[in-house]
Length: 177
Image (cartoon, rainbow, N blue to C red):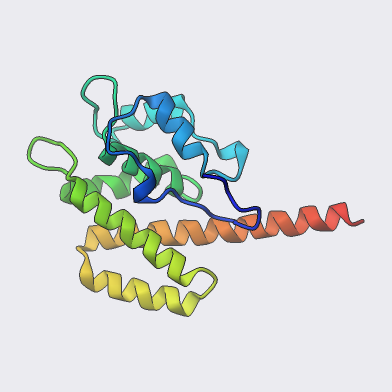
């Protein structure tokens, strides 16, 4: 999917994530299509580090499930504003709600969290009052851990959008002088 030049923040949608399992190189290709800043591209080493740090659950074999891909997309969004240690603390709490007794991801819950985030952010982009209203509703409709992740994702995306606007403003100013 081609990005619009005017877009500042772009996240993959659930519909764009295939139902089939993917190899790590395929995930990198897929998710980097949604990264506007080439300096922040996802790499194989990053995904391996997330696994070593136990931020994402181990895969079976060499392929990642749809749930793993969503979690990697979530981490990719959060790493724009949080440290890996902060993401790990958050995900450790969230994993209590999104893992079954066999330590496998519960896809329906992960999809619900991610869809809530993308819906809230797309509806409230550049409108902090609307964001507050939608987050308040989300706090009532989700567990505390799920809500914290949704809120962190929205605020991370908002932070990245402001950061990108500053960069665009500065580069425009430099070009015109």
